[in-house]
Length: 498
Image 1: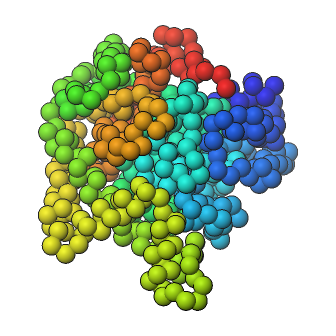
Image 2: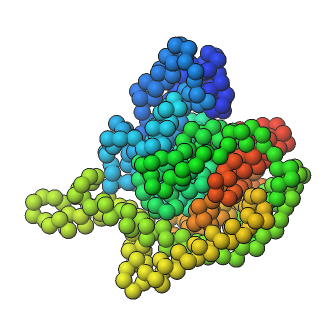
Image 3: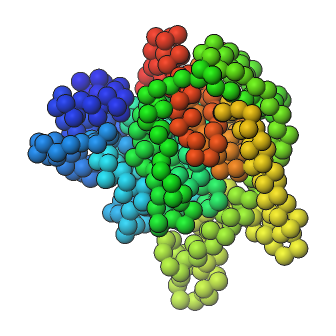
C-alpha cells in the first residue's frame, strides 16, 4: 500500500483525498515511512517534523469530514528547502551559523502552503546559504542522487530534488539564484521552475543575493509543479520586490499543453565546448520533437550570454557580502569566543571563522573586494552593465520567439567530490541557467531522456519572458506528454530502486 501511495502524483493524491479514497494521514504516514526507510542513504532531509506533519494531515481529514471544500493540493506532502523561516521548526540554511535556530515566524511562502493545506514533512538539505551547485557545501554533509548515490543531486537545492526522486515527497520547494531549482531538477530527472523574479514572495527566505534569489516549485510532473506554483505565488506587501499583478494561468496551461504554432528559439551560445555528448544528443532530439509537435524552430545568436557567468560571479558575491554581514554574533545565531576577555570584533571574527564554510567565505571575500573603494566601478559596476545587455538581448530574442529552449546543464550528475577543489569547474554547472536569473525571466527544467553514455537524466530548459510563466507549462506539458506516449511511462520510473 505504501509503495502505491508514494508513486502517485500530487494531483492524484489530492483527488483521492478529496474523494475519500485515501486520508491525508495515510498519505503522510506512507511518506514518513519512506523517509525512514531510505533517507539514511539519501540524506535529503535535515529535519523531519513527524508530529507537525501528522497534525496538519489530521486537520485536512477533519475539514473533509465537516464537508468543507478542499483545495487542489490539500493533504499533499511537501519537502521544504531549509532556507525558509518556519515557526517552531529549525531553519539552518545548511550552515553551522544558524544551527539550532528556530524562527518565531513563517515565511510568506510557508504561510501560503499552510493556507493551501499542504502538509510540510520537514526541511531539506542544501548548499550553505544556497551557495553551490552540488549540495556538497552543506555543513551537515552531502546529499546523494537517487539515480546513483555516489553522484551529486544538484545544488543548492539538492535535498529537495533528491526527496522527489527518492519518492520521499511528491512536492518540494527550492530557491533559484543562478539555477538552484533547475539544475537539481535536471540531474535527478524531476521538474523544477524558477518563476519570474518577484512572482513568489521572498519574505522569510534567508537572503543570499537579493536581486537574483527566487523561490519556486519542484515536482515530478509539470501539472504538479503548476499546482504548487499557483499555491505559493502572488503579491506580498511584505516584499518590496513582489509583483503586484495576477498570477499567470499556469495550471490551465499545464492542463492544455501545446506548442502548435509557437516559435521556439535555440541559442547558439548554449552548446559547444564543455557540453557532454549525450546531453547535446538528447537536447537535439527534444528540438526535433518540438518541431514534430508543430513548433517553428528559430536559431538565435545572443553573444552577451557568454559573459553571464562572469557577471553573475561578481553580482551574487557582492550581494552575499552585504547580506551576510548581519551574522555578526551579536544578535542571533552562533556566538564563539565570548568569554569576557575578547572584544566584539574578536568575537565576530571567531564566530564567522567557525560558522561559515569555505565556499561562503570565498564568496564573501570576492564580493567585498568587488565592492571596495577603487574597484566598485571596474567590477560590480561593469557586471551590472553586462546584466543590462543580457536583459536587452532576451527582450530582443522574445520579439522573435515565444520561448527559448536549451540544455539545463552542460553535463549529467558528476561524482561527489569530483569538483570540490575546483570552484571554476563547479560554477560551470550553471552555465545555461544563469542568464535567466540576471534578466529576471521565468524558466523551467524538465526531463528529456537519459544520456546514453552513463544512463543519467538530462534536463531540457524552457525560458519564457517575465510574467509569461504560463508559456513554460504549456510547452512543458506538451513535451512531457510526448515523452510519456513515446516510452509508455514517466522517465523517473527508470531510476534505480533504493
